[in-house]
Length: 126
Image (tube, rainbow, N blue to C red; front, top):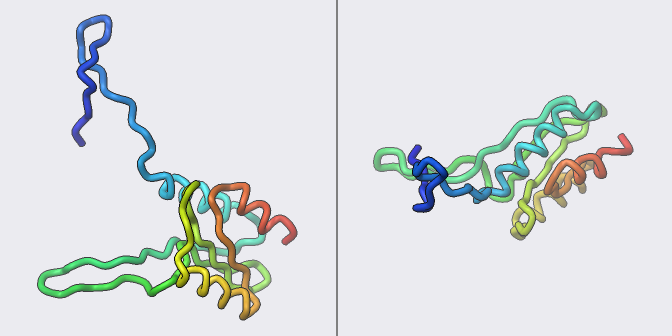
Protein backbone atom coordinates (compact mmCIF):
# COMPACT_ATOMS: atom_id res chain seq x y z
CA UNK A 1 0.00 0.00 0.00
CA UNK A 2 1.26 3.46 -0.75
CA UNK A 3 1.45 6.00 2.02
CA UNK A 4 -0.04 9.44 1.68
CA UNK A 5 2.28 12.30 2.61
CA UNK A 6 1.17 15.75 3.58
CA UNK A 7 4.35 17.54 2.59
CA UNK A 8 5.03 18.22 6.28
CA UNK A 9 8.31 17.14 7.81
CA UNK A 10 9.31 16.06 11.28
CA UNK A 11 12.28 17.38 13.34
CA UNK A 12 14.68 15.28 11.27
CA UNK A 13 13.40 16.60 7.95
CA UNK A 14 11.63 13.36 7.09
CA UNK A 15 8.22 13.48 5.48
CA UNK A 16 5.38 12.59 7.83
CA UNK A 17 2.37 10.64 6.61
CA UNK A 18 -1.02 12.27 6.94
CA UNK A 19 -3.37 10.85 9.51
CA UNK A 20 -5.86 8.48 7.97
CA UNK A 21 -9.47 8.96 8.79
CA UNK A 22 -11.80 6.01 8.93
CA UNK A 23 -13.24 6.33 5.46
CA UNK A 24 -15.20 3.10 5.96
CA UNK A 25 -17.19 3.57 9.17
CA UNK A 26 -19.62 0.76 8.24
CA UNK A 27 -16.73 -1.70 8.00
CA UNK A 28 -15.58 -0.72 11.50
CA UNK A 29 -19.14 -1.09 12.79
CA UNK A 30 -19.40 -4.53 11.18
CA UNK A 31 -16.26 -5.76 12.97
CA UNK A 32 -17.56 -4.49 16.32
CA UNK A 33 -21.04 -5.96 15.81
CA UNK A 34 -19.68 -9.37 14.73
CA UNK A 35 -17.42 -9.53 17.80
CA UNK A 36 -20.39 -8.71 20.05
CA UNK A 37 -22.61 -11.32 18.38
CA UNK A 38 -19.95 -14.03 18.43
CA UNK A 39 -19.41 -13.62 22.17
CA UNK A 40 -23.04 -13.25 23.22
CA UNK A 41 -24.38 -16.36 25.01
CA UNK A 42 -27.73 -16.20 23.18
CA UNK A 43 -26.10 -16.50 19.74
CA UNK A 44 -25.23 -20.03 18.58
CA UNK A 45 -23.67 -18.91 15.30
CA UNK A 46 -23.57 -15.90 13.00
CA UNK A 47 -21.96 -15.24 9.65
CA UNK A 48 -21.30 -12.21 7.47
CA UNK A 49 -23.40 -12.35 4.31
CA UNK A 50 -21.55 -10.91 1.34
CA UNK A 51 -23.71 -9.30 -1.29
CA UNK A 52 -22.91 -7.43 -4.44
CA UNK A 53 -21.91 -8.17 -8.00
CA UNK A 54 -18.80 -8.68 -10.09
CA UNK A 55 -17.87 -9.28 -13.69
CA UNK A 56 -16.09 -12.61 -14.08
CA UNK A 57 -14.81 -13.04 -17.60
CA UNK A 58 -17.71 -12.09 -19.82
CA UNK A 59 -20.36 -12.87 -17.21
CA UNK A 60 -21.97 -10.65 -14.59
CA UNK A 61 -22.44 -12.56 -11.31
CA UNK A 62 -24.55 -11.46 -8.33
CA UNK A 63 -23.76 -12.54 -4.76
CA UNK A 64 -26.42 -12.78 -2.08
CA UNK A 65 -29.96 -11.58 -2.59
CA UNK A 66 -31.82 -8.29 -2.43
CA UNK A 67 -32.38 -7.03 1.09
CA UNK A 68 -30.28 -9.73 2.77
CA UNK A 69 -29.00 -8.48 6.13
CA UNK A 70 -25.25 -8.09 6.67
CA UNK A 71 -25.28 -10.84 9.31
CA UNK A 72 -27.41 -13.98 9.52
CA UNK A 73 -27.32 -16.37 12.45
CA UNK A 74 -29.21 -18.53 14.88
CA UNK A 75 -30.18 -17.91 18.49
CA UNK A 76 -29.86 -20.58 21.17
CA UNK A 77 -33.65 -21.00 21.18
CA UNK A 78 -33.54 -21.93 17.47
CA UNK A 79 -34.79 -18.64 16.01
CA UNK A 80 -33.25 -16.97 12.97
CA UNK A 81 -31.16 -13.87 13.65
CA UNK A 82 -30.78 -11.08 11.07
CA UNK A 83 -28.71 -7.97 11.71
CA UNK A 84 -28.31 -5.07 9.30
CA UNK A 85 -25.16 -3.13 10.16
CA UNK A 86 -25.01 0.59 9.43
CA UNK A 87 -22.40 3.25 10.04
CA UNK A 88 -23.25 6.32 12.10
CA UNK A 89 -25.12 8.01 9.26
CA UNK A 90 -26.16 4.99 7.18
CA UNK A 91 -29.80 4.56 6.16
CA UNK A 92 -31.83 1.46 5.49
CA UNK A 93 -32.99 0.74 1.95
CA UNK A 94 -36.66 -0.32 1.63
CA UNK A 95 -35.61 -3.87 0.66
CA UNK A 96 -33.53 -4.18 3.84
CA UNK A 97 -36.38 -2.95 6.04
CA UNK A 98 -38.77 -5.40 4.38
CA UNK A 99 -36.40 -8.33 4.90
CA UNK A 100 -35.95 -7.57 8.62
CA UNK A 101 -39.75 -7.36 8.93
CA UNK A 102 -40.08 -10.76 7.24
CA UNK A 103 -37.68 -12.30 9.76
CA UNK A 104 -39.60 -10.78 12.68
CA UNK A 105 -42.93 -11.86 11.16
CA UNK A 106 -41.73 -15.46 11.06
CA UNK A 107 -40.76 -15.36 14.76
CA UNK A 108 -37.08 -14.53 14.33
CA UNK A 109 -35.11 -11.64 15.75
CA UNK A 110 -33.98 -8.86 13.41
CA UNK A 111 -32.58 -5.41 14.08
CA UNK A 112 -30.26 -2.66 12.89
CA UNK A 113 -26.95 -2.29 14.73
CA UNK A 114 -24.52 0.59 14.50
CA UNK A 115 -22.26 -0.62 17.31
CA UNK A 116 -21.89 -2.96 20.28
CA UNK A 117 -24.50 -1.09 22.33
CA UNK A 118 -27.25 -1.90 19.83
CA UNK A 119 -26.41 -5.61 20.00
CA UNK A 120 -26.44 -5.62 23.80
CA UNK A 121 -29.72 -3.68 23.90
CA UNK A 122 -31.48 -6.03 21.46
CA UNK A 123 -30.13 -9.31 22.86
CA UNK A 124 -29.99 -8.18 26.49
CA UNK A 125 -33.15 -9.96 27.61
CA UNK A 126 -32.22 -13.35 26.07
